[in-house]
Length: 419
Ligand SMILES: Cc1cc2nc3c(=O)[nH]c(=O)nc-3n(C[C@H](O)[C@H](O)[C@H](O)COP(=O)(O)OP(=O)(O)OC[C@H]3O[C@@H](n4cnc5c(N)ncnc54)[C@H](O)[C@@H]3O)c2cc1C
Image 1 (spheres, rainbow, N blue to C red):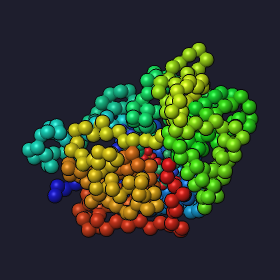
Image 2: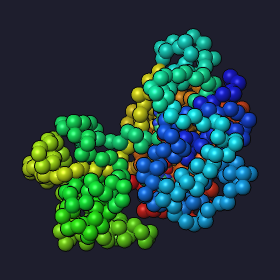
Image 3: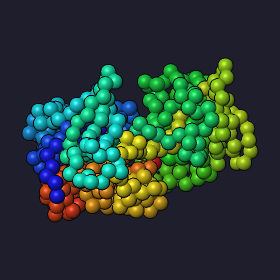
Image 4: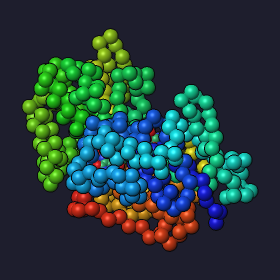
C-alpha cells in the first residue's frame, strides 16, 4: 500500500475539522480547503437553529484534545446549542489553535478532484498517481494542490433538493430564485423583512418545514397580515403531527401541538397531497400553479421556502472512480446501513474505512455528504468515520476497522432526530 503523507480535506465543517485533528494525531499532514471565510460556514447559515443533540454529541475528542491543550473549557455537556454557538464556542476556537490554524486555507472552493496525469479512464499505474485537487480562490483564479489522499467532507448544504416531485426544478423555479429560499431562513430575525406581513408558501414534510411554519406563525402574532400556506407532498400530516404530539421529547411535542392548533384555527393553511407544477412571477408576487388532492388551482404568494432535504454535489468528483449507490448517492457499502426506511440517526451503526472506500484508493467521502440523500446523519458518526480513515491512512489497519460509537448519556430515540 502506498505511503501517505499529504491529505487534502475538502470543507471545514465540524467533520472536516475533526478529520484534520485525527490526521494530525496520526502524524499526517492535512490541508483543509474551505470555500467560506470561516470554519463552519454552512452551519452559520442555519446558525439561528437549535440542534437536537447536546454538546456531548457535538464535540470530537481529537479536536477537544487540541483545544484543551490550548486552555479551552468544555461547554456544559447537556446544553443544546444553536448552530452559531457551535461555531463560536467550538469550531472557531479550534481553528485558531496553532495546530489547526496553519492547516486551513479559506476562500478555497474545490471545483474538481482527479489524479495527476490520469483522467478517469486511464488505468496504468493509477493507484500510484497523486490526487490533484483544483480549487478557486476569492478572485476566481484556479489553483491545483497535490495529495496522497483526499477526504471530501464538503456537506450537502449548498445543494438542496428542488421543488419538483421528479427531483428537478419546476418550470419557473430557476427563474424566480430571488423569491425562493431553501433550507432554514431566519424568518424571525435576519430575514424577517422578507416574510413579515407577506404570504409565504412552505414546502416540505419534515420537522424543518414544521419549524419554519411555526416561526412564521410567531411573525403572524406580531403582524396579522403574515399569511402561511404549508404544502406537503404526501398526506402524512397526522404522522408528522401525531409523532409530535406523542413525542417523548418535550420540544418536539410542543411543536406538534402548536402546528395542529394552528391548522385547526385556520392560522395555517394546510395543503396535503400537494405538488407545484409551475411558478410565474407577476406584478404582485408569485402565481403558483398547483395540484392539491388531484385538483388543479393557482395560489398567490410573495415567497416560497423549500425544505425538502439535500443531496450531495458529485459533479466535482466526476474524474474519481467512485463506488456510489445509485439510489442513495452514498458509498455503496454504507447505503444499506443508513436507509431512512429502516434507520434513524441513532440506529446507524458505527462505520469507517470499510464502508467508505471507493475504487480509487485513499479517496473518501465522509461527514454529512457520505449519507448522500439520507437525512439521518449525526456528527458523532462522522467523527468515528474520520478517526477510522485517519488510522487507515497512517497504516493502522486494525484500529481503522474497529469502529465504535459511545453515545454519551442517554441514547437517542427515533423521534429525537432526523428530518
Ligand atoms: C438544521 C440542522 C440541524 C442539525 N442538527 C444536528 C444535531 O442536533 N446533531 C447532529 O449530530 N447533527 C445535526 N445536523 C446534521 C449534521 O451533523 C450537520 O449538518 C453538520 O454540520 C454536518 O457536518 P459536516 O462537516 O459533514 O458538513 P457541513 O457542516 O455542511 O460542512 C461542510 C463545509 O464544507 C464547505 N464546503 C462545501 N463545499 C465546498 C467546496 N466545494 N470546497 C471547499 N469547501 C466546501 C462548507 O462551506 C462547509 O464549511 C443538523 C443539520 C442541520 C441542517
